[in-house]
Length: 114
Length: 108
Image 1 (cartoon, rainbow over the protein chains, first blue to last red):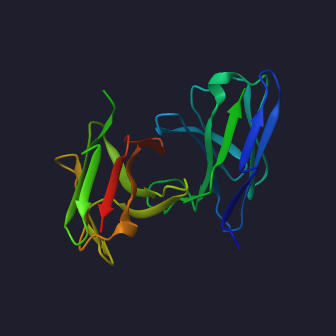
Image 2: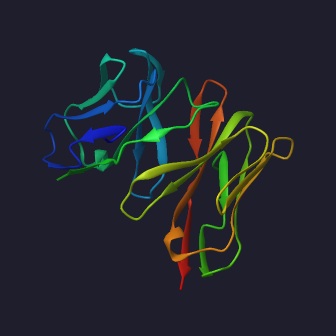
């Protein structure tokens, strides 16, 4: 069983479309995250949720909207996709925050906007 | 200038060599993570530390909070250690800030 699973793994879509990436963790963790890895392989936090509540919201265009229906799921919806949104998006989870806890990452979702 | 600096950016080693990857940071932190990203893209947590030293198999991680510096050591390196090693610090506010990564290639 994969601890943190995200779907789809690969997504190719046209500019202007709306798409979602889903994430689920079966570790019983309270905190979930979305990270973006750009073309230079640099990782950056986008959002963090603790028990369904948004606790970190970095400077991300409001076309990106996270949704956490329960503490095991954190989905990322992206409206009006742009070329610059092409990246790898990683979902992750930890027991309670990143200080003092191991982080478990999903395998990544490769998004290509054409 | 990035808040988290790693060196070297690229490292090629012969199998069996002792490897050190360094991480320096400029902000106050509550913890530091070392991560490994394999060529396939998956990211695995190696260590989380807030003081001292941790060891797991052939990997050793150290941190000096006063000097704002951490090192990751690999003993008896092996081609399967080839990966990108990423240092990430936990800023107050529970936010992870990542270094740019060190690309390690171990040749047999």
